[in-house]
Each structure stands twice: as C-alpha cells, then as structure tokens.
Length: 604
Image (cartoon, rainbow, N blue to C red; front, side, top):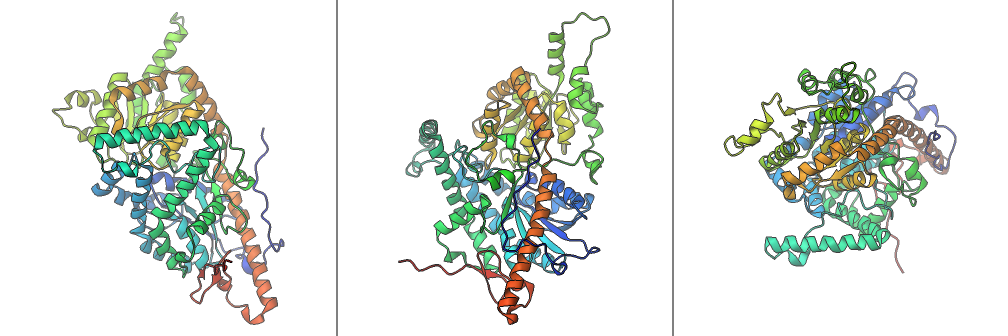
C-alpha cells in the first residue's frame, strides 16, 4: 500500500496552540453547520461527513441546513436541522422542468436557469442561517456545498470566529489535463449569429460547431482545457451575479467594487487552496476518477482530494434502517435469479443458479444464463423531466429491444407507466407489467449500496453521487447526461473504460439506448475494468480523511485568531474589543460587524 495522505500544515503567523479562551470547555460540545443546497446528490454526502464528524476527537455537534425534504433523515442521524429553500419543490414546478429540459443541450443556458433559481430565495436562506449561527456560541465551522458557496463565505465574514470550508464533489481547480467539470464541452450553445435561423438550421450549425471544437481539442487539448476553464468562471460569475451581490450585501460588502478580473482571481485562488484566499476547499471525489491523473495541480488540491463520501457501513449509522431493501425489491431479484437474500452481490454472482451435482452444462453457457437474469438498474435521481412520457417510452422501448429486466427509480421526475397513454403505448405497458413489477419494478427509494452490486449494469444521469455509487458497485455504467457536471462524468466513465455515454434524452432513441445497455451488460472487458475500479473505490475512506482535515482547520483557525487578537492588544489596548471585530482574510471590518473589500490600489 500507498501511505495515508495528509494535508500539509498551512503556514501561520503564530504556530502555538490556541488558548483555552478560544476553545470550548471540556463539557461544551463544538458545533459544525453543514449547509447543503441543490439536488439530493449535493446533500446526501453531508450525512456521511456529519456522521464521521460526530466521531472525530471528542465528537462535534452537527447541524444540517438544507431543504425540508432532508429533515427526517437529519433526525435519523442525530443532527440538528435548520430549514432552507427546498430545491426539490422548486425543480418540480412545470415551468422549471421545461426550462431545464430546454437548456439540456446548452451548457451556458442551464447555469443561467439555475442562477435564477437560487437568486429568488437567497434572502430567506441567509436570514435563517445568520439567526441560527448568531444564537449559537458553540459554532466553530460551516461546511458548504457548491450551491451555497457564497453563503458560507458571507457567514465567515459576518462571524470571523467561524472557519468556512467549501466542499466540492467535482474537480474545480483549472488544469490542462481535463476540461471544466461544470461545463459540458459536448453541449455548446447555438452560435449567437445563428439564433435567428430556423430550428433545423440551428441544429446543423450547432453540430458543425461541435465538430470544430472536437478537432481543436484533439490538436491542442491543454490550451482548450484552460480556455474552457476560463469560460466556466465567466459563466458562473454572470449566472450567479445577482445571487452573490445580494448575499454579500447582507454583510456590508459591495461586489461592484471589484473588477471582473479580480473576481476571477478570487475564484481561482479559492479552488486551488492558495494561501491568502481565505477559504479551504475539500474535494470529495476519488483520485481514481482520472485514467491519467493530472500533473499540474497544486499539492494543496491533491492533498485535499479525499475520495467519495458513501454511507457508513451497516451497523455504524443511526439511519441504518433506511438502507435495508424493501420486501418487494428482494422478491423481484429472487424471482429473476439475482439472489435477493444474499449479503454480498459480488459473491452471489458465482453462486446464482448453480447447476445440480453432476451437471454437464458448460460453464460459459451457465455464466451467460446468470448474466441474462441479472436486472439493470435505472435511475435519474433528482432530474426533473418535462416530457416524462417520452423518457418512459425510450426507456421501456430500449429494455424491450434488449430483452432486459430493470429496477427503475421513479426519482424526482416521478417516472412510471402512468406517464404513458394506455392505448397508444399498450405494448410497452404490457411489457412493463404492474407497478409491483413484472419486467420492470418501479421504486420510490432504493439502497444503492445494496442493490447495484446485484445488477448487471446501471443507466444513470451522471450525477456525481449516483455515478460514484454505480462505480463503487463494480458494475459497468451507461450515462445519459442532462446538464451541469454530468457530461464531464460521462466522459470520465468512457475514458476509464468502465461504461458508455448515451445521447441526451432529446436526441436518444430506443434502439440506440438498447444497443448501449446490451453492450454494458455483456462486455467482459468492461466488466473486469469496472470490478477493479470498484475495489479501489471501496478501499477509500473519504469521510474519515475529510473529518480529520476539518478538525485540523478548526484548530489552525483558532490559533490564527488568537495571534490576531494578541497583535491587536499589543499594538492598541483600546482595540482589543469583541472577538468579532477581527476581519476575515483580505477584508476590513465595518461598524455592522461584517467586512468590506479592501480599497483598490490606484493605478499608474
């Protein structure tokens, strides 16, 4: 083995440990706030991290800030809960469904829609967060996902004694070795000069543009990757401009004082974990995501890449019952020879449908029979789909053509045979069977870590969490991206040789998807690669490494604040007031307790 990776110590003006005055007493538990926003895949990893934080050292108290749909799970894990804006409720609105589906083939438009979504509720979120943290003297840290990155930074400026840590589930630091993770280079917008053309002409222009971009990537991959990383930053700054300005205005900072170049520099420094950026980013994905690991990343980024966050092992988590398979799922797998009562899906593959003693059936034929009986898993997670009937027709048509059974997660789109016309789609309804399952079992919730190893392959939307769960199961994956980071994940799956990329729903056909599913379920080389990758992912402990980094950063932040307070007292005894008077990195305090950007230097 490889030695355990630890994050190098950050330089500090005062290396001595913090005084007892800046640390909680032995009987007062410190509190960490986990702020999650976005889809389910953006919030679910926080439960794994929070569970480990409660076990770290003397144990932290954990409070989750997220949408109302996460309240019951937070209680099951023993977390406190503060309700923020519910992405699930908003994304299920018909207008938002249509907007996201229309933007699925446009990497710029999809972020503009998402920026409008979060800007509409930023005031309520920051009010709820400030009230909760302001009343909690034990608060020591906030950990925020990408959707609430600005909120976490603003809270750190409002409450300087609290350390802010960003959590990213995708590689964000610019590199010449890979394209930007949040910008699908295969879903470029229609050229501006062609938007007045008829729809068929626009599609032709978009396809021609894509061919040119692909050629440029083949000729100069490093330069193109860097260029698209810069384009992503510009897109994010533009799409979230209103959200960011309203967030920082609550703590007395006017972002209009900064130029666009200065804003881009701040983002790059934060993503690279550079000194002076005022924040730390933990990257919650595996280094094995890349077939060729990037060679131009700062060591701070490499050391902060800890691995995926998966649910705690069975028997460790408080929410253990949530991951047990429901009886109908076990019955569906048992009926089709998938060993629904087995403890380990990987072990059952050798034992399923074993021949009677003395049987002369060839091993190869027996193995193929077993694989045909293993179902597929289909799940599009938190994706809300406007044209649900089209999606269900494509899916059932592909399963029918490939002669495969499947367990289908209804998801936020609420897919099911009820989306079909019983007369027009009578053949597909008959193939699918009843809602309880014949060839297709529709499920509201499924325990990924239990089900996926018992399936031949998976069809997913490419979300970071769902794709990680499919790869960890050691099974091939077919990715049908809908936007955001999903195109990037699809390309990584193809590059690793463990899966395939399907066309987006707007351009996919049952025949094309059937061919991909058939290959994923039967390709032996792909299955071997997927099994090897799954073993490497299962050996990682992402939440454990992340919890250790968080604890180290909390102690280092307390030490830095004590040094700042000592410096203030020694230079001006009158300035040694409230601890909240010490500004955050790169900011100067205001009368309201927040901070404002440093004055710009005169040029000349």
